[in-house]
Structures are given as structure tokens and as C-alpha cells.
Length: 593
Image (cartoon, rainbow, N blue to C red; front, side, top):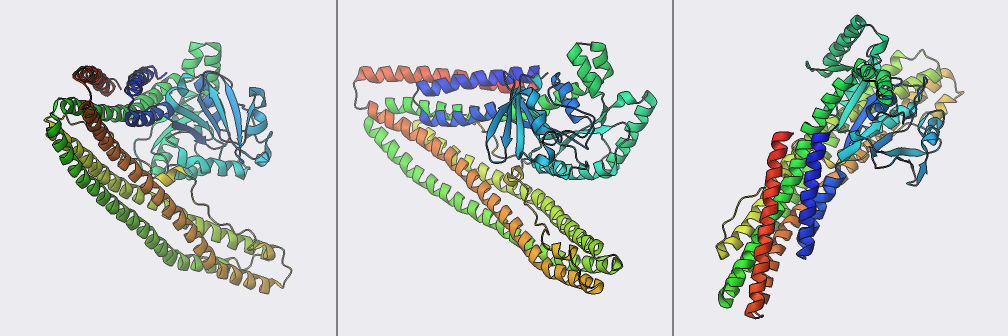
């Protein structure tokens, strides 16, 4: 699994290691720092492949079948209650991470005590997640497989945990069952998933319980229903018997494995991980490296030319460069001011949209409550209050959920547009720096474009954090649930009380949502601007250091100057060779993935 991608990833690592060693030998801290960031990105390379679905669809068994080991506990009753993260490790290691941040290493036999409803009912042990390091090919090169609690079981905390993890999903494996086929609860969950996840693989598990005709009929039904629910006409459903697949792998029974249909799905998943995920990722890494090497080549050429330039001419050229550098730095500051203005514009838009949401939704929710109160007026007081509470909660969550989803999409596109614009501007500033220095010393520049700072499909920063938490009405209606006041009075009083609280609750939630969006917009812009300025400053520093070293050479004897020229020529040849290796690997990745 992933052999081709692993080979390219290994080659990229080897090339980067060579360049990192070069930067250390050359005592170039600027290049070392930039390369360190790229290499860390290559090492981390996390990709969350999350298994989702209703309870008792065989998610844990499916994951076991992928890795070929009975690692995760399975049972007849709804079992998984904690998010479990499987990542690569040379040796098996299981760690429980608690909500207070502490960690505890456990054995495989002790896993059920923390991740199952039986061993950890309603998460009384306050477990945040469990992380398992395991030597599986599926988990190499940053792929993390996530087992989630099933939604729709009687354990509401399990459903909540699964929903909380949705913002972190890169691709989803959505498990259905052959009998019964897809349910309304699964469709509701699927509609929520698609707000977060672009790539969803649909797998119909337990097909071994059906004959061929039943399997085809069941899959055709699920396909039709899903396409109608999602508004798509190209949904593919993959048949699977996770139970047979696991047995086939653990016993080395190829016939049983073929009967399970797993090999067919593995090929599809393999192609996706390599072509859609791996190619984009490795191209980004290699282009970033290529840009750094291009800058280093310019720096070395400038220093070589500067050493050979007479002192008076060199001083004049350095003075001209510093003057141009001042103009470029002023341009960078102006770029920053415009960037801040764009951030403020986005924040102002959030403020406007929140006010619009409040003005539009509050009257609608008030009317909905009043209508519900009138329709349900014959219920006893407890059912009446519970109905009003549910109407209010459902209305608020629905209103805010739809609004947040829309705002996430719109702000993501706008942030992407702005970031691309300023990334292009930063690259123009860097190019002007290189051109200024190259012209002074008569150096021919080769255009090398760095990696894009942000893609059109990139997630806005706040999507990687927790979604804003909605208020609940706990305490707002407790009094009425226990009330012994006269029936009519209690009902009217309950309605007035909830109607009175509604504006305050809407205000509170609007405030929370606005604060959350504002904070994340600011953090996104601050980090992005910092990264751009670092790139500009690194290029300027590299050129200035080269010129300073050239000036220092004017103070030494001819023999030392000649030695330095030979050293620079050797380094230039080495860097150009590494640049050729990166270019060659880029072509290989483009053609091979």
C-alpha cells in the first residue's frame, strides 16, 4: 500500500536532508531556518482519514481489516465511545489523552477500559482521545485513520464526540449496512458531514449477510437516496464484508479476502491517497525547496561577482542596493497596511452579518414559539414546557448552524482571494529585491515560483478549531418542570419567561459567534502576514550577508580571496546540482502520481 507515494516521499526526504546538511556546513542560519520549516511540514504530513457512520455499522472491524490486525475492540452492542486516532509508529504504542492534558500509556488489553461504553460509560474517565502508534503501511507518510463513536445510539455523548471531530476531517469513509439500508438518521448525519468534508467514500458493509440480488438491490437503493439527499448524480458505493476481510488478512486467506471485496476498495483508496493527496503535497514541498535554492544560487553569484568587483565600484553598488532596499521595505510596509485593511473589512462584514442574523432570526423564532405554544396549549405543563424548550433550541441551533456554514464558505473564499493577492504581491517584492541586486552585478536571473501560500480549497483557520458552542437553556425552564402553580398560570408564565429570555440568549450567542470569527480572522491574517514578511526579510538578509562577506574579503590578502572564490564556486556547483535534483523529482512526481 502506498509504495509509489512512499518512494517519492523518501526521495524528497533525502534531497531535503542533503540541502539541510549543506546549509549547516555553509553556516547559513536563514536558509537553515526556512528549510527546517519545510522539512517539518514533510515529516508531519498529517492527513485525517476518518471512519464515520451510525452505531453498529462495523467501523472498528473495518479499520482492523485495513491494518490486518484485531487492534480495536469490537462487540455486538454499541461499543466505541471515544475518538481513537491511529498513526504510524515503528512499534505499537497506545496512549490515553485526558481532557486535562495528561497522558497515560496502556496495553492493548486495557484499551476497552477507555474507548468503550462498557469500560467508560458516558466518558466518566474524562478521556479526550486515544492515540495508537502502529506499524501499518496504511499509516505511513502521515495518514491518520480515525475511529469515531457511532451517531444515533442511545448514548448522546457518543454522537456529540463524533460531531465535534468533523472540522478535522480531510476525507471520510462513510459506512452503511446492507440490512437495513440507509436510514433517515444516517441521511441527516450525511448532510452535516458534507458541510465539512469534500471527499466521502461510501462503503456498504456486511454484504455477506445478503445474496447477490439483495446486495445489488440494497446498494442501488442507498445510491439513489444519497444522490437525492446530496444533490449529486455520481455517488459510488463500494461493497464490503469487513468481517471476511479481517479473517482473510489475519489468516493469509487470499480467496476469503477477494470475497470480502476489500482489495477493490483498497485500490481506489490507494489511488486517492497517492494522486489527490500525495501529488499536491509533495509538489508543494518541492516547489518551496526549489525557491529557496534559487535564492541561494543568486546569493552565491552575487558574492562571487562582488568579490571580483573593485572596492570603489563595490561600495557604490552596495549604496545603490541599500537605497533600493529602503524603497522595497517601504513597499512591504504599505502592503502590510493594505492587508490590515482587508482583515478589518472581513471583520466588519462578520459584524454586519451577525446583526442581520439577529434582526432576521429573532422575530421568526418569536413567531415560531408563539405558534407552537398555541398548538400545544392542551399539553400538561411539563410536556408543554419541554416542547417549547425543544422548539427554541432546535430553532436557534438550526439558524446559527446554517448561518455559520454559509459564512465559513464565503469567508474562506474571500480569505483565499485576499491571501493569494498579497502572496503574489510579496513574491513581486522578493523578485524586485533579486532583480535589483542581479542588475547591479550583471547576473542573469531564472524565474523560480515558490509554493502558493494558500489554495482555493484551503480551509480557513477557524475550521481547524472547535466550532462555536451554542448556549443551552439549562436552568431556564427547570422551575417550570417542577412547578405546582395553577395549570393555566404556569403555562402562560412559562411562555412569557422563555419569550423574555430569547432576545438575551440570541444576543449572547451572536456575541460568541462574532468573537470567535473575529479572533480567528485576526489570527489567520497575523500569521499569514508574518510568514510573508519572513520570506521577504529572509531574501533581503541573504543578499546583505553576501555583500557584507564580499566587503570583508577586501580586507584580506589575495590568497584568501582566491580560496574564498574557489569555495563559493564549489558551493554554487553543489547548490545547482541539488536544484537540478529537485527539478527532476518534481517532474517524476508530476508524471508518476
